[in-house]
Image 1 (cartoon, rainbow, N blue to C red):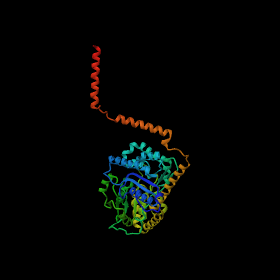
Image 2 (tube, rainbow, N blue to C red):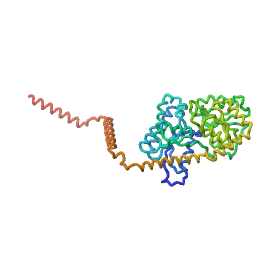
Image 3 (cartoon, rainbow, N blue to C red):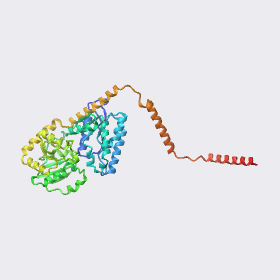
Image 4 (tube, rainbow, N blue to C red):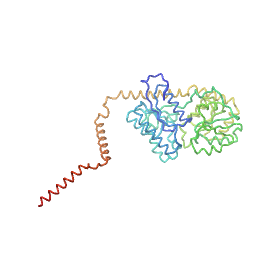
Length: 439
């Protein structure tokens, strides 16, 4: 990546950002990763991103191959960088170990609990113990962790066993998402959900709400975003009359739709306690930045934000009837909806942009690098490990092992034809001498 920066090239720390997820365009993960990369570039970092955005249809074979490709590239490039930044993933363990061995500081971005992987990919559930251990070990080795909610910060500190854990929440690109711009109207008034379509985002709860008696008949539900959970396709094929699926929409086309909505819905669920440590979804900040109030489920993080800033309505988790009533309340009171929307836009524009988040993260990473530099300066001067007795023994043992392996792997070469002829001649002479001796 490249971006304009006032920092001199010599002052630009090299950061390797590694993401094992496939970054689908217009999803929260893709937006988050690219916004952070751009922001760090502007703040003097030279960022190299390792991630895949396109590929064949998702499946376990393709997923494992993607992990291997990302890991291989990460191992190849890690030593060329000053710091490693990983979007937390169990598959990053070999990379974290390699960085630890060669002395490169590592920071991890924590977006959820271990259980997230097993809810999204149920086939991994039998390996829960080992995969959680792999992730926990990376946290314990880390030089810094950043998490998106206060509750998740406290959880990560317990898992890591150290206090180098910091809060860096989600945000909105306020250049694209802001209240100043056109609003897109439709034949019917509408509320909107946008983001990846997965069950824990409350897709079925919203559709149940549309079928409730409390749902206002003049209001339409618009669903926007890629289908991440393929099991939802039959649900989308049987939408109720008051709902429409618009498919995936380019990010630049979203703000007019959001501004024209009565409210944006954020009814995230809590399957197996995956949201118990809090959620701060990207879609909430983007909707509020456009001046549109949100209707959010009562989960730590997002519910606290909505209540504290008076920018929407909080409803119980998984309660479709209450969700329908909240839509009806805002549809019947446009002045209240506008007031809540203005409050949300003011809050997000004041301190929840990606510019602010990138500045926070850049400060954390620079302090991590400075702390490591001070720690190295305080250590007594030592020779390189390969000049120590232990290092020499390791190198010698490795050389012997490689030599034996090459020896065993080398095919046996047949003797040269001339040598065979000489051997036969010697055998004949020896036989002749033996016969003469007997006579």
